Amino acid sequence: MAKTRAIYRCADCGHEVAKWVGRCPECQAWGTIAEAAAARPALAKVAAGAPAAPAMPIARVDVESARAKTSGVAELDRVLGGGLVPGAVILLAGEPGVGKSTLLLEATYRWAAGSGTPALYVTGEESAGQVRLRAERTGALHDELYLAAESDLGGLLGHVDVVKPGLLIVDSVQTMSTATAEGSAGGVTQVRAVATALVALAKERGLPVVLVGHVTKDGSVAGPRVLEHLVDVVLQFEGDRHSTLRLLRGVKNRFGPSDEVGCFELVEEGIVGVPDPSGLFLNKREAAVAGTAVTVVVEGKRPLMAEVQALVASSSMPTPRRAVSGLDSARVAMVLAVLERRGKVRLGNADVYAATVGGMKVTEPSADLALALAVASAARDIALPPDMVAIGEVGLAGEVRRVSGTGRRLTEAMRLGFTRALVPPDSGPMPSGMRVSVVQDVQAALRILRKEGKALRDESKETED
Image (cartoon, rainbow, N blue to C red; front, side):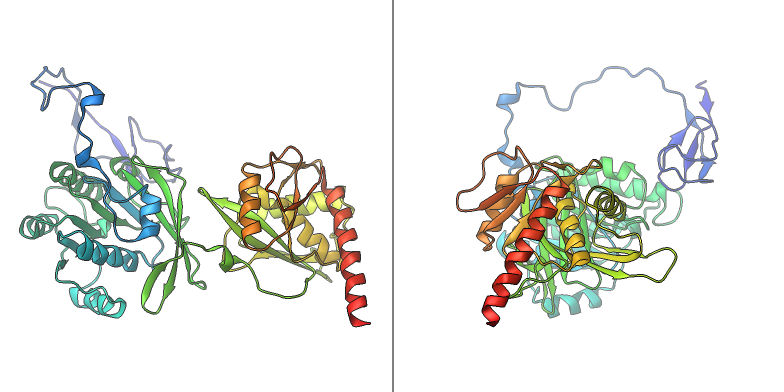
């Protein structure tokens, strides 16, 4: 008789351990480890069996059946690496209200209109009438787009057998349940069972399947961690509630680059792709303003212009305030310390506010130099020229370090009308036509700030005269 042993499983992430512990070693949650409902038999020997298909040299494997097909949404295809691969399972996660359902409804409509095969949209969170109203508002009505309100896995598979779609959308995987697994819908066991069945369906029929997933409070994909390992592609849909801009970020992709980013904008008619989003993150102004600096960040493989703004005001509080929006607060604190210690910019008795424009989130170290110049510009009331960009990482010793792809970043800046740049040493070849100044450290950047500020003031006086 085979021996059985007790196992313990985390209720949050599904991680299994051999004995009870107070803290899950996978997700670090406290008090979530509990003994599994059923004992699992110990592993036994497995006899060799006949393979489903013979092995063959890799060069002779047919790839035509696995070629990506366009979804009809260019920005989505960019992130997917060219389009939807037959048999691929894609997990799309994002906060509630960010626009996941709107994006997938648009993609389903484009597929139905352009591929010649039906598309099936299965919703477990809304009624069919609610989705129909959204489709009417966004103009996503088509005879080959099929809609079903279903929360049972068996019913979903029945719809697939009847419709025989070329694309399947499941919104969302946490609302689906099956009678063959224990627990309620959204639980670890149910989500694992539903996802496993849908992955098997996708591979068996060569059907692209898109699963919508919920996120936790910290923004990570909810449910067992095994869910991310089962699927082929994991996409994160990000956006600020107070901004219309949305970013689709690739987290995992077995068929293409996993660092690509797609840009979308929510409008009254639905959601539209933004192939050239750099202008969304810049303020249009004629004259230079103190406390602003422009940099170029790279999201995936796409260089994007970003404007960093700072405001420095005297404080009457014992502990001055530091408020950050769109930037990494720890990195801002480090840059402020470097400015005060290495650049002699007094900030100890002042409130400092730092933010980005357009709801953009900047975490890349290449924005350090622009942040330092924006704070120094605000503290000393000296404006940078409006046609200048600053790129570079700032170290604790005050040095400015080089970042990758400086030439590509400056090419994007030139395309948008910028003619001057501050860059770190050894940044590689620069594009012709750009006036580039190399800065070794923060002190050198502040000297250029004073020089350019004086030139702008003299020019302004001459204009007034």
